[in-house]
Image (cartoon, rainbow, N blue to C red; front, top):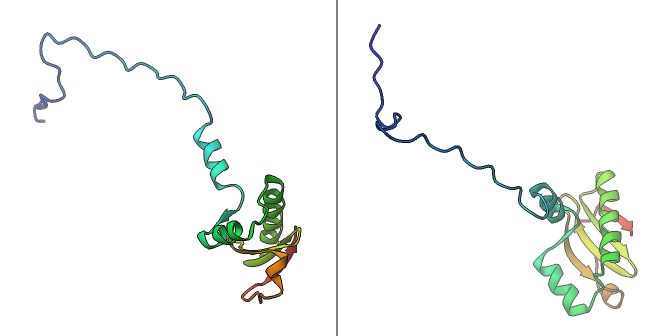
Length: 125
C-alpha cells in the first residue's frame, strides 16, 4: 500500500483559522422562479406580425379578451388542433396552437378580404 500524498491546495496552511461556514442567505423577496416562469409561459404570445396588425387595426387586447383567447386556445389544444382561427368578439386570431402564438389578427372590417389557409380548426372564444 502506498503512502497517501497530501495535496497542499486542499490542506489549510499551518496556523490558519478554520473557514467560516457560509451564512444562509435570505430567500429572495417577491415571486419565486416557478411563479415567474408560469407567468411568462402562461397565456398566448403574439408574433411581431400579429403585434403590428393589432396596433395598426386598433384590435382590443384587454385582459378579458386575452383570457377568452387563451381559453379558446386551450380548448383547441385539448382537441389536438395545430393551427386555429379563434373568433373573439368579431376579431379573428390565427393561432399556432402548439406554440401558443398568435400569428395574425383580423378585425371585422378587414375580414371580408381574407382567406384563412392551413387551418385545421375554428374556435369561438
